[in-house]
Amino acid sequence: EPGAANLIGSGIKTDRNDDGSPAGSHPAFAAHPIQGWTPDFIPLVLEQGLGLQDEMVEIPDGAGVETSQALARNEGILTGISGGATMWAAIETAKKAPEGSVIVAMLPDTGERYLSTPLFASIDADMNEEELEIARSTPNFILEPSA
Image 1: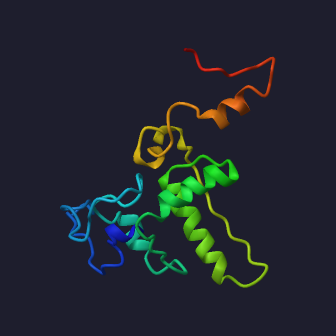
Image 2 (image 1 turned 90 degrees about the vertical axis):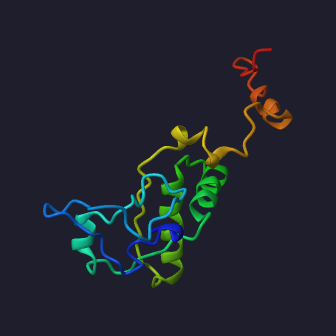
């Protein structure tokens, strides 16, 4: 879970209504950049399953963004912040795993929906000269931006 919103790690259970729904925001909740992860309560199904997992991995602030950007830059995998955080946790798990272990990490989201978010804010909208050179490298299919 995100370091900035360490609900489970806080040891505080979510206050619930009689039907199991959250009665309010969890006291340990804080805004964090991992969209799709950690709402302001611990889901009942998660709370009931605590103890079944082998390990709970806390994701440090910035790790999801950095890993997502590295996946795009180095591996050609475009995923969101939660995908980056998932891969970060898988890499950290692999560092401690016995040799020959099989680790599965699902990155079920594409990064396309995050192009206008802080995840890709450092990428210029216009191509630079190096990118234009690559675009011009296929003479019959030049991706030249319109003037």
